[in-house]
Amino acid sequence: MANLGIPQNTIAVLQKYNFNFQKKFGQNFLIDTRVLDRIIESAEITGEDCILEIGPGIGTMTQYLAENAREVVAVEIDKNLIPILEDTLSEYDNVTVINDDILKVDINKIVEEKNAGKPIKVVANLPYYITTPIIMGLFESHVPLQSITIMVQKEVADRMQVGPGTKDYGALSLAVQYYAKPEIVANVPPNCFMPRPNVGSAVIRLTRYDAPPVQVNDEKYMFSLIRASFNQRRKTLVNGLTNAPELGLSKEKVTETLEKLGWSATIRGEALTLEQFAQLSNVLK
Ligand code: SAM
View 1 (cartoon, rainbow, N blue to C red):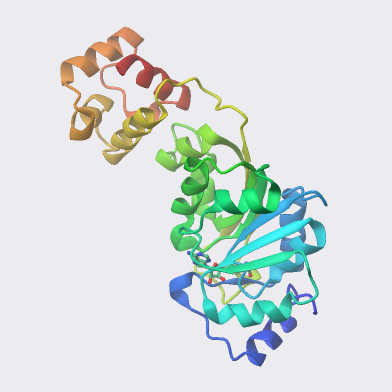
View 2: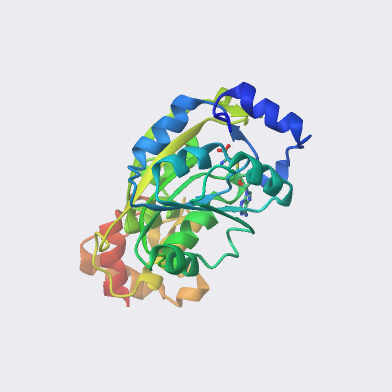
């Protein structure tokens, strides 16, 4: 099968199958061989690797993955793409396509079956409408993972990478940085896709830490503090935390804790580093 990274070849496949793009599935197919090469290179794929691809589309990146990895499992929600994938991937015997919603698939089971439970790599040009649930699902379900190399909306890539004191800093930055080291490896303009998205994109690699970079006694509790602080971004940390009923914290208790930590009583959650949220969580709990 011809290289689908070349626009004419993608057009030929779409015409052959009379394929209609489904906006609701975030379908923007890659048509740039340099971007595809860059993704494969950044994901550091070797002949030993088992790769999970989320949303293979017509199989463009899947071809590149199959050429470089030992094993590829691709999960695609759109049943209309399944016969196309059978065709475009027919020459590879190391690819398994699963027709399902990635948010419903038991990824741990795939890792067990295809990679004897050893860490896999995730590589994907993600459907942008569910970027955050996909990433958080992968981390929180503790799927054995080496890295996640993904194309996302540029603004979301920025949010994952930044620290305190910037407008993009938020719960997603802290969650990603607790589990992984983020690095933006390429910026990708809309003309590299068919159809063109309305936003710029970026490829980001998240390299999973063996152990989190901060020591926290109760992970779940720290993330509820983080969510409460950023739910009311413009409020002080004291108000943000005491306005979250699920935390059951009194103003006195929070003020006293801040004093104990030597922090200003008017500090805002958006000024705190991951390490400080861990500290706060350990003292409050
Ligand atoms: N990988 C292809 C490429 O780079 O050309 C397609 C990328 S396109 C941005 C996203 C793909 O994810 C589409 O094929 C879409 O049908 C699929 N998709 C959307 N939601 C999904 C879900 N919940 N589970 C699995 N695949 C999904």
